[in-house]
Amino acid sequence: MVALGIATGLRCSELFALTWGDFDWANSTMFVRRAIVDGVVDEVKTKYSKAGLPLDPALAEMMLRWKAQSKFASDEDWVFASWRTLGKKPLRSTSVLENILKPAAQRAGLGLIGWHTFRRTFSTLLRGNGEDIKVQQELMRHADIRTTMNLYTQANSDQKRQAHGKIVQAILVGESAECSLALPRPSGT
Image 1 (cartoon, rainbow, N blue to C red):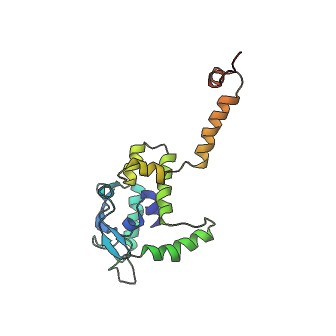
Image 2 (tube, rainbow, N blue to C red):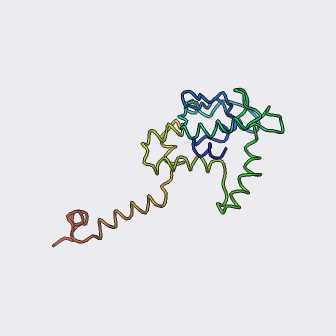
Image 3 (cartoon, helix red, strand yellow):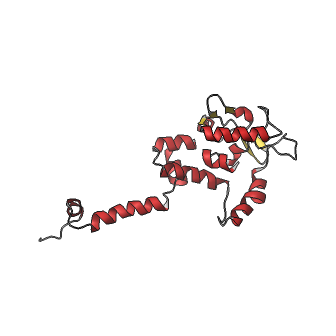
């Protein structure tokens, strides 16, 4: 569940609403067709949310292994079915978060996490890999590219350190042509 969330950037309402019929194994694609909040199945957030997502072969293989282990593996069954309801309902995202993920994150020393942590991580990893901004937007399934950049994507520390290092090198490295062009000369010299 966590691996699929991080690897796709799905909203938790979409993640828990997946059925096995949402996977097109032959074309390595996953479709987000519905959302579920507090046990209520509804439409996805925006029309862009319904876009098919590419399914990497390694992720597809992992999901097929999960399907093979599940007692609820028909196309109509929830991917993350609740055993308490005999698969008639999916697990509840809030219960999984409070009872499993948060305690595991604390034990691992990761601090406080939430479902959106995985979505933001996905966006930040896309940026860190140097993916085109339009690719980032479409994989995040945002209607507006500003949402992707302003709310989800963060520059990681290594990226900031490298960018800063390039500026410092340009300023401090000897009498290079680049350096003399980059620094303004005091008036009167």
